[in-house]
Amino acid sequence: MAPPSTSHKLTDTEIKNLCSKTINLGGCYKLLKSDPHTTNADARGLAEVLIDLASNKANKTHSLLNSFVNATHDSRLKNICKLCSSNYNDVIRDLKVVKNYLHSGAYRNIHVQVKDASEEIRQCKKVYGGASSHHAHIKKKNHEFEFLLGIVEVTLDKLNKN
Image 1: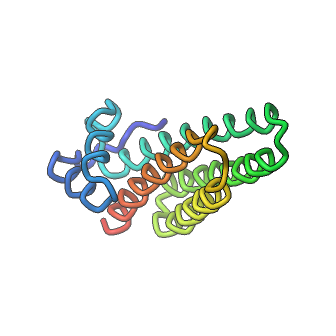
Image 2: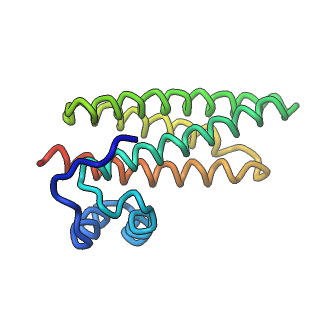
């Protein structure tokens, strides 16, 4: 991860304002204040930290889905896991592109990729909606990832306006 730029460090008030634009102000604030990488970050540095967090979460969920594909003998559940695994593979690709755009300063191009990633997760949530409760933790991971992606989007909006 590249070090955050040395421009304006986000204040506590700015973080609260940023989080007020998400679906969960308290959860967003807690996440941002608990990560040591955000302590001295400016908006660009915060976006980079969040993209890294989202990428890590997407990679872990992708691996978990692939392990379910290999472990289950239920063809319906196997297909659901394959579809979601494919969605997360696309999300991982989208986040790599987002990070490249962030590094190049092409902030206006980022939103298409973030929206694509959000749509991939929505598709996974749809197909996983009917899956057994045995894999309810995947539904939870989808929800957590969607929340994190929302924070990424709000942070990138701030960069786009600066």
